[in-house]
Length: 242
Image (tube, rainbow, N blue to C red):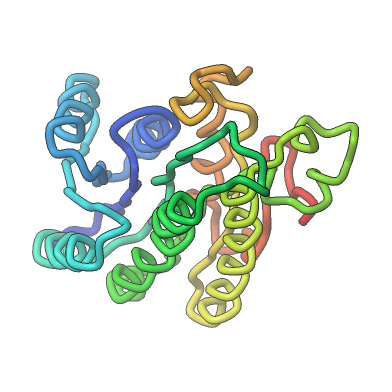
């Protein structure tokens, strides 16, 4: 057990997740690199350790109850505490079908990772977060999770019409608020952030921002002090419309 602050970032072996992990480690935290693929996760750990950062691998498939339970047990046995949780893991299975043609199996699989995953992981790791002081939970949302933005013709997000991904990101905001209301008396702050239009595998690297730029808001919200907000939706320009 140690006084150093500990963080877990899911889906951290590449892209925005890796950039978030790097940023938190540079801020002095000991970071668990959460990934379902051991070889990719360990490769990411080697990369960050070569930069002199305090990181370690944690095998976790956010869609698998047993995997999440084992991951929580691992962190409990090795550090006994968690100060920051960033629910970043996510997938998009089909970016071409219109809502009327979306396949139910794809919808269910996407919800399992992107919506139920953050709920599952938060519930499993909450005892460890409660064991510390000033816990921070950050859920990775999206501009398409804002009803205001997807209905605003001047917003880039109004051109996106994914049935599953958009719907679950809207729901993730509600999940964030629910946890924030429960945990606020304990000093645990829970927020959802949108990274912007980032170059990632999810959009075939067609975004305008780098993963490092997309990670900035999540890092900032993971490090907010006791006077910081909770139950909010934030982007690079501050609080975003729901």
